[in-house]
Image (tube, rainbow, N blue to C red):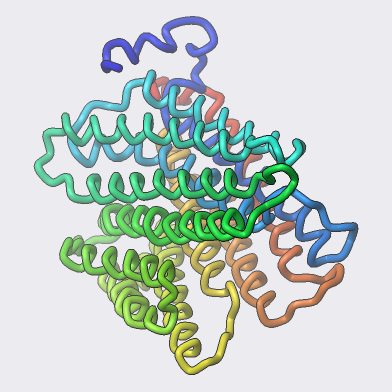
Length: 432
């Protein structure tokens, strides 16, 4: 598909609405809807299994697979593509991503996830989940191609951050295919799941989870933070020296991938080494990027700095858990993982999505009020989910269940405030 032909896709009618005029509009709105649907589903499932409110539901495959597939590849990915299709061309000095590419990716992605949700209501013998993941993978490739085209055509000689996130996106695509295989292997054959099917399904699902977190999400978020947080801070603080050493970023990314590989081969007792190095680097970056000054400079800047602090905390918890495992003690459960996903990923997401939404809708980022309030409510969800690993109860007061309810309320309010901006023209009259 050429850039000229791809521009003609939305040339008339429905696609002329302002909603389709920029990649962040379509992707962020879809991400907001996914944030609600993903956790409403999880809240409903936990209401049966942990809060004991009604009988447990059988989805045909483990509910945890559905949850992680939706969170890793469904919810976060819309915001990632919306941000990268807006920012990455600027990083490399390329033209904006043409409308045909980002709309094609958008339509394929939402089509795949709509099919995925349909699978919740269909018999497990129908391979809906697998087909849905393949449709998502196709949309993913279209989006990745558009980003690679920007890198190819960009005039900026420094394309290292852009290439790093695209490699991570490619790994994410592999993780999607792993989940497609997991769901396919879970389909009963003549009413029976054979032992080898069971083993292949769990292996593929585990690969999809580890690749998704350590090969896709963490490298993307860490690279974007390394690229953008010093830039944001330098725009607010003066004097300020931008600190962005690529060598340390490569070390950090190698450590993150090493954790994922170690987890896949069952070397949990050795994960403390890459986790400890990555944690130290994360705290070092927070200090060099001047967390203390940035916290008191502006609300949006403080959100970015606090969000990044969670990365060092989560990696430290992973390291401690690995050391305990080496001594024969299993402690913490999924606490490190949820500190990482809720504390780091979701906090970065709220800060970045709020900034991009305001800035690219012609509004001042200093006008934000609700993003700041909801950000701190989310920090409470992180602590609540963390406490749930140690204060579990199978009744109405279950903390896992309550953390999902609060998540839904937070993102419902976020969508109520910011989603209408995607459907309205910029107040300053500029395109985009």
